[in-house]
Image (cartoon, rainbow, N blue to C red):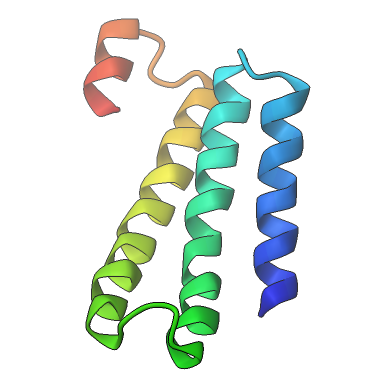
Length: 91
């Protein structure tokens, strides 16, 4: 699982450092970062670094932020909707 987290967060770092002003890269990095949270939680809870009572909340964040990041990334990447005000409302 540690390889999963390292790979996702490394890809997110590369995207952010490569073109930090690109909105597409920022949303892709957000998606990768949020996807890595679940793998990190699976590592840290059994080791005792995170209290077990916080695991459901962290997993909830993982399960809600990751699909949201994918949705907004797809919208920004395809430039749909084209109206900037409507795009801002979706975000």
